[in-house]
Image 1: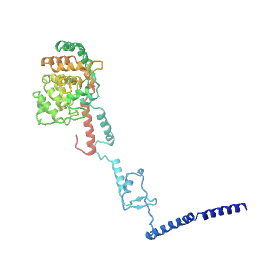
Image 2: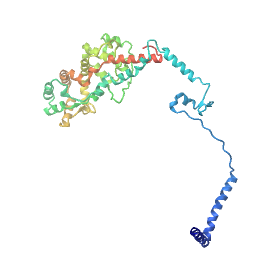
Image 3: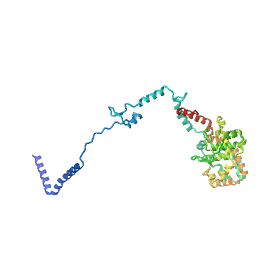
Image 4: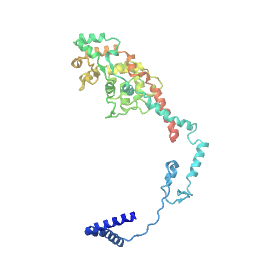
Length: 387
């Protein structure tokens, strides 16, 4: 009875509230009718039409293989029990089975070339890339060094600067303790930086150049042609062109010293010298011959950038002293430059140059052998003519 009494009171309360607010009651009754009328009008204007059932084929996952994924994009297949598209008349599996049989039982590469040798190609390529043999990489990986570090004795050079060029001991000490930028040395040699390539403006015919060089009758002309045209069979970097060319060909020692002449022939990759192991000390002598010539030293001292780009001054010394030394060298006469280069060539240690540039690792013959071996193995795979 208590529940019915509470229900009666609740209904009487709601009825009383609705009776007191007739407009609210009318609005509550009218809103559902409006929504119903809107739905009826939409249905009459756009009648419903039945949708057919849609079926989608199962797509193979990447683990199914490349062939299955490619066939999923083809038309004309039928569905199997698992709703995968199959092509009963395809010959892919038959073809792959035949290829596997041929690869297993026959050697379809060049004779005397196995699949195991093909696996060696990446390691040969990696050894060529990871163990560069060019002078360019020797300079790129070398650390900067001080001038007095590579000299056997600096007393003669100090006397020359003080007595012949009127430099103070402090200025001479500043020069000897300045660090030499090895990357700038490479730019002097090649005429280009590590991030750029040298562009030849003119090429000439060098048909008889090699015979002239071997006869030692016209070696300057041959070196010029080889450095301009390059040797496509040489593993040596072909960027040693402009400055190296002119300074080397202008040297009288190149004509008279057969050892240096042989080393230059090895560096530019002449066929007559390819089987000869390169001598790192001779390479150091060639570099000294080129870099320590009066023309090169004068060019560095009087150049637009000056010696500041080649020499890195020690923070303990004054930069103005180094600039004064540079100006003195730039204004020096021919006899002074000739004597200066003679002292530098005599006192700079060949072995120290070898150690700094790691010229002992400069083995162009081995690099050429690796490159030839790599090309031969690749030619077997792609059926190229034998190297």
